[in-house]
Every structure is written in structure tokens, then in C-alpha cells.
Length: 253
Ligand SMILES: Nc1ncnc2c1ncn2[C@@H]1O[C@H](COP(=O)(O)OP(=O)(O)O)[C@@H](O)[C@H]1O
Ligand SMILES: [Mg+2]
Image (cartoon, rainbow, N blue to C red; front, side, top):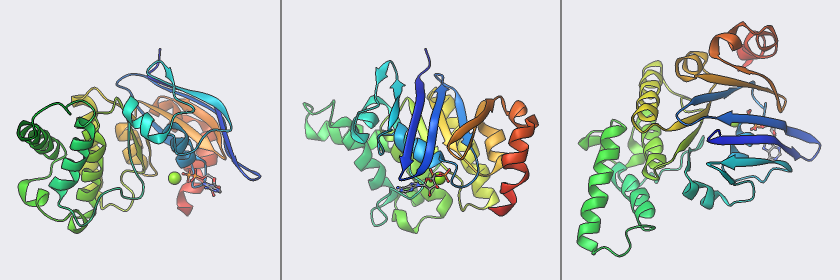
């Protein structure tokens, strides 16, 4: 059974069908992307999977449980982490403190009987480990998060999601606005963390080098409908995809 199964999920905004009977699966440890032109419904789909928007119809099964009606908070607790297209960090706290807050919120659930001093040691070790994993050094960790370079803020954003130890990570446009160098670093980071933690990944992305560099499977959305899905090479060779997406709309973005 797949880790995540979305079955025929639909969401309309007034007369606009943002997602239309979308079905998709992500296997344990698999890296899957959703591509499609602006307005295709990618973020709406993510919002439904992460519980920010309730689908009008359809169901979402995660790790053997029906999560369709759960709150965003409960979905995070079940193991779907998410880094936001708009930043979720506290800009006036240090990078270290940002991760520390997330680690504490995760540990509060399980470690509330421990003595405070040993709790703090564990929290700080875990925080340091996450900062190392996402590639922020001590100097960066002690800067205010809002003053970090965009690429480093995105690393921090991913670190916040990792602190909650997700089984599935959702990333919406992780390289938006980045330089080529920051993009390359982010691609490496995403590959490393998914492999290191055997974590599944579902992401959207407009940069085709990133899409083909990371994805093991790709879904193509257009006007709310899945028009193709398959291995990267099959998607690249698909005439309908080329016509609808790769050929025409990409130049307009
Ligand atoms: N909260 C909302 N209210 C009304 N329309 C929305 C809302 N969110 C998204 N839409 C519309 O739904 C469509 C899909 O949007 P979105 O999911 O953001 O696409 P993508 O992420 O693929 O660019 C767009 O036409 C968008 O304008
Ligand atoms: Mg979007």
C-alpha cells in the first residue's frame, strides 16, 4: 500500500474547478513532483493534502489512515511535514532558536515527564543536528533568520519541517526566487535529506532542471486535471505534456 493515496480529490472556488478528480500516490521513500503551468492547481492540491483546504469530494489516505477530514495540525502529527511557499520562519529570532522552537513543539508531545535540564540538552543536541543536516554553520545559526540569504532561509524552512520528523515532506516551489547556485545547493539538500531519513517527498517546481534532477515520478496538472504521470523520461517525451506545458506556457512564466 502506498504511503499517500489521494483518490479523486476535487476543490472548486466558486465556478472555478481548481482540482478536478485528482488521484495520486506516493510510495515510501519515493520522490514525486507535480508540475504544471501557473494556476494549474498545484498549491490547492498541497493545501488539501496538508489539511488547509477540505476537498469538496474524494479521500486522502496517509500511512493507512483516512486523513481527509483532519485538521492541518493533526496531519502534521501524523507525519506530513510541509515547507511553505511563503516563509514560515520567525525573522527576528536566530536560526538556532527557530529550529529549537520546532524541536520543542515536537518533543512536548513525548518528553513532558523529563526533568527540564536534561530536556534542554536533548533539545539543543537535536537542534544542532538539524542545523548540520541542512548545512547552516554556527555563524549562520546565530544570525537573525530574517537576515540570512534567501537560500539559507529556505534551508531553515526545510529544517523546521524536519524537526517534526515527517514521513512525507511537501515542498511547494522550493527554489522559487533563488540564484542558480542556491538552487543547486537546495537540490543537493533535498536529495540528501530524503535519502538520509528514507523520507518520501512530494514537491512542485517550475525549474525543469530541478524537477528532472530530483523526481523519480512526475504528475502533470493542467487546469485542475492530471493529464499525465510517469517516469521523468516518459513525461519529457509525452506530446500532450510538451504541447500543454513544456512547449507553450513555460516561456510565459
Ligand atoms: N483561495 C482561493 N480562492 C479563489 N480562487 C483560488 C484560491 N486559491 C487558488 N485559487 C485559484 O485556483 C486556481 C489554482 O490555483 P493554485 O492551486 O494556486 O495553482 P498553482 O499552484 O498550480 O499555480 C487558480 O486559478 C487560482 O486563481
Ligand atoms: Mg502554487
